[in-house]
Image (cartoon, rainbow, N blue to C red):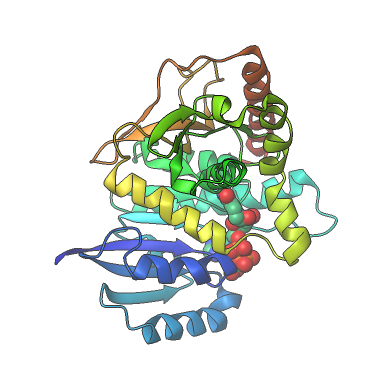
Length: 334
Ligand code: NAX
């Protein structure tokens, strides 16, 4: 079996991690032949709960897991990691202003970026899930200058999966028959779920989704809205935020980053924008369609036609990210 990979999950005592750790441990991300050291980081008050998670993971008796480390010490957690999945973040509490939330998260992601810079492998790949995911990822990346910017991504795969499922349901096909739906921008209600370039396999015949759905009003209206507010709809119904589907999306994101995307398909990830993609302002973590090679290097899908309708939506979500970045910058330690 290959040398174990060191995989860190932060927020390990939380609800997403509870589903995620089992899936990673049984091989859903790195495959059935890759052994793993699982590292679980949470904050000191959660160490009792984390101990319970550790016991349960041990009791799952997972052959791929060579050892498990549960800790509140970032140095222990980040040392030598190959992958860091940053799920833990400061949640929005009642009465909390958006700026207060950003302030608390800037602090967390500055210090985690610095820990990555000091202790992780220089080849580490980082996925930020904790919200506001795009801006947290940007802050983290900026605090780890010794790691390539391309190694930092944030998760919009849950939004992609939601969009794919909505279309599959509409066309009564299986989810994997729908490919190449794009999520542009922020993992927030300004995101733009875009089906214009997506395809669907109907009885072995590939068609463009727009042609197959035959209802532009739905695609430009209800479809977009449903995906944009899906997280809030889950909270309203469950009184808790998405966890099972978030864990599945993390696995999908990481698996594609590890194995690469299949020929002819792309996925959406929040990635660092240097200003050369689709007229999006530089210096943002913005969700784009990417293909991923076998070594994990991603490339933005080039040459897609952007309609005026799409342009407006892509710019709106970019503006929100610029505002978030500018607010976050006020709280950056000098
Ligand atoms: P929970 O509140 O259940 O768990 C979060 C855990 O993180 C807690 O155990 C907490 O103690 C820990 N934590 C807080 N600060 C930490 C730090 N500095 N270091 C290590 N651990 C820390 O939240 P959960 O439902 O698991 O959600 C986690 C995050 O994912 C939230 O920020 C949530 O908003 C975000 N989400 C992001 C999604 C995305 O698509 N990008 C979708 C799902 C989810 O809403």
